[in-house]
Structure formats: C-alpha cells, structure tokens
Amino acid sequence: MNFQLIFIDMKVMLMSKRATYTILFLAIFALTFAAMIEYSPEGLKSALEAAKPDGSAGAFEYMWFEDVLKMLLLMVVSFGAFMISDLEDDDTMGLTLARPESRLDFLIRRTLSSVLSFLMIFTIGSLIAGVIAWAIVSSLDLPLFILHQLMILPMLLFVFALTFFFSVPLRTVTYSVLAGFAGSLFLSFTYGFALMADPGSEPSIYNPLAFGYRVMAGMPLAESFLVVLVSTIILFVAGGLWFIKKDI
Image 1 (cartoon, rainbow, N blue to C red):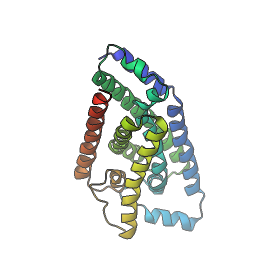
Image 2 (tube, rainbow, N blue to C red):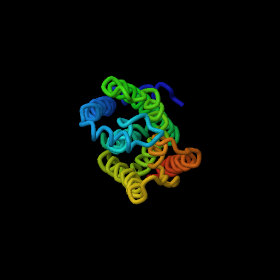
Image 3 (cartoon, rainbow, N blue to C red):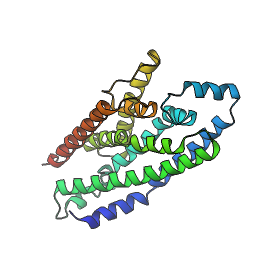
Image 4 (spheres, rainbow, N blue to C red):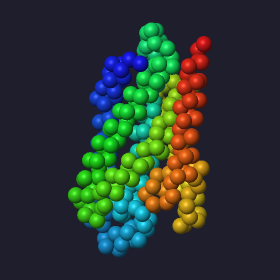
C-alpha cells in the first residue's frame, strides 16, 4: 500500500470545495436554526421543547436531526462520489489505473483516503456547528450534541457506501450524487412517514437511515447498528467487486 498516495488523495480532499462547503454548511445552518429557536415566540419554543424526544440534547438538536440532516446527506454523497467518479469526470481514470497498481490496491487507497478525509471534515464541522449553536441556545447540551453527531457516523458511512455502489455503473459525479441522494432520501422519508403515521413508535431497525433518529432519541442501538454495519459492508464489497471486474 502506497501511503504517500493516500496522503496526496487526502490532501486533495481536505483542500477541496467539498470540504469547505461542508464545514460552511454546518456552521451556517447551526447559526440559522439556533437563532430561529432562541428568538422564536415563547409558545413555539415551548412546543419545540415538548416535541423533542427525551434522549435528545434539546430543541435545537431535534430540529437539526429533522431538517438539517436530510440536507447533510447531499454533502455525504459528494464524498462517496470522490472515490472513482471524480477521476471518471476528469478523464484520468485510465491514466491512474495504468500505474503499477492493481484495481484492488487502487480501490483500498481511495476508500481509505475518502473515508478518513470525510471523518475529519465532518468532525471539525460538527464541533464548529455545536459551539455556534451552544453560544446562542444556552439550553443545548453541547457534549451530548457532539456525541450524537459522532454516533451517527456509521449511518453516514452507509450513505457513503451507497453512493460508491451507484458510482460504479454511473461513473460521473453528477449521476452518482443524484442516485446516492435519492436513495438515502427515500430511506429517510420512509421512516419519517412511518413515525408520522404512528407517533411515539420506534422506527424499524431494518432502515439504516432510521439509525440517526434512534441515536438522538436515546433508543436501543445494538440491532440497528448491526443492520447499518452489515449493509455498509455489503455495499462496499459489492461495489468493489463490480469495479474490480469491470472492463475485464
């Protein structure tokens, strides 16, 4: 494994517009939603406090998970598309694979660099967003909010893997991002509508996108986490095997 190439890939990702936009997105939405909650009428503020699940870090986190997280999925799928679609768009995939490096080594390298870069960027963005929100909404439990943000990483990596799987046949960034976003949104709205139909119920453990809600609400995670983990591994392995055998 060429660690120098991994560091180069990570440098490209960390210096990319994806990284900048993700951190700005988290910061701006934290500022916006925190101000909405803090300066909303007392009646609305009380309603939000009453609606939040018992295990959440406060009304801000409840709105954050309900609204911002769905938009955050768009940021996640852009990182999943980085693995191979960027090279397809730049017409440099053939040149890259012409190196004395197997497709498997190439895929492992791109997976490591993409995932590590995403984890770093998301962690930094979450810390910034949490501090901004806490500075405005004093009732926010900042440590719990940050903990919940880190706990949903398995779910976000599932979305990452889903996008990578779609990117193998679709190739281009645009189509890969659209497919990954549409697939994750479908799963997100599926459990959302189920909760609306039966308020107070637990979302299905078999829906990977329901994992985030379970984290925020303080619900049992073991079985749901196993579903997310297995689904993520299957998508990565299936997409990887497809990519390795492609064009052969």
